[in-house]
Image 1: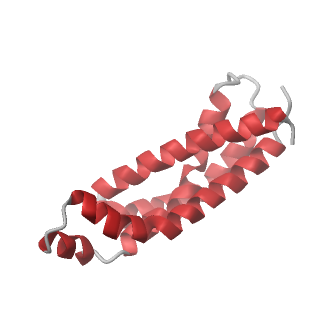
Image 2: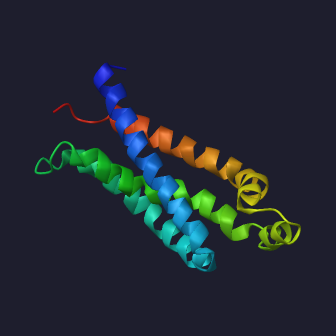
Length: 141
């Protein structure tokens, strides 16, 4: 891989990762609507990947904007598993931990991080594969 391809990979991965973390944080705040959010993400996975694939061919877009838009388009493909883990996670775990005296930091460390570890790694793996593929096939401008 050339340095340009590696730099493009890093830029796309970074933008999409930051957006994935922000969207997951928003999902934690809106846990009542996780079923609807999961369904919406499933509907947007294929169009999002297709859009991310087609964006570099749009010559009228500024070069700096293409990786940002690709990161946003890949978000549904990356958020499906963490949102599913949040949706299917036992809702009583957080209440039980709070009832036993665990503060917000302890609940995050003992409940949410173990619950999201596997799906988060899977989401980052999908993001990394998509980023490498998109960067490898990006036209040289």
